[in-house]
Image (cartoon, rainbow, N blue to C red; front, side, top):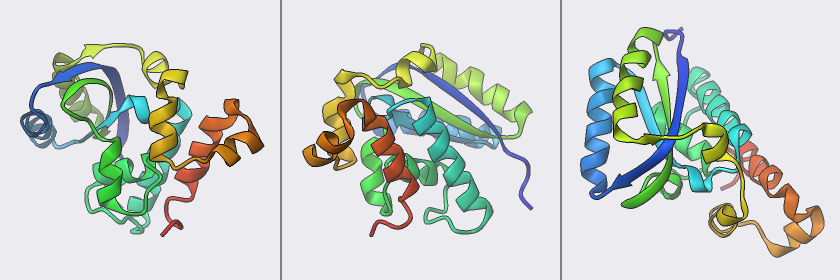
Length: 176
């Protein structure tokens, strides 16, 4: 059985002039502290439930050997995007320019706390409840990423968009 993984989440605003350079910094923090760090575009997350559900599914997949991605961070990204295919899940990742970001850190608690304080220096921290909450400004990107149709919204109601996304995450392994 693998070491017990603790989870830490940090949210905030981050300006990324150069994505490969930024990811290199994050990966260095991760490898120096022996943790996994995955950054996601919070504008494509419909709330804390979406994030926690995706992380839980990804970790269970990894624990049971059912993961598609070798890297647990990529597996989290895949579930968060409700995607079977790894390439397609990168659309929920960070991008150049201004980001509302959420970073998920996995590892042993002592290591996590060190990595957490390093990641904190890279971002302008904001409460996750705020950054992750679903709002109208997220609607267009989310409908596009999760391919939610007007018919689905008519059938279930605009206020159920977050639930429709959770459904996509739940089905990430079955959608070909």
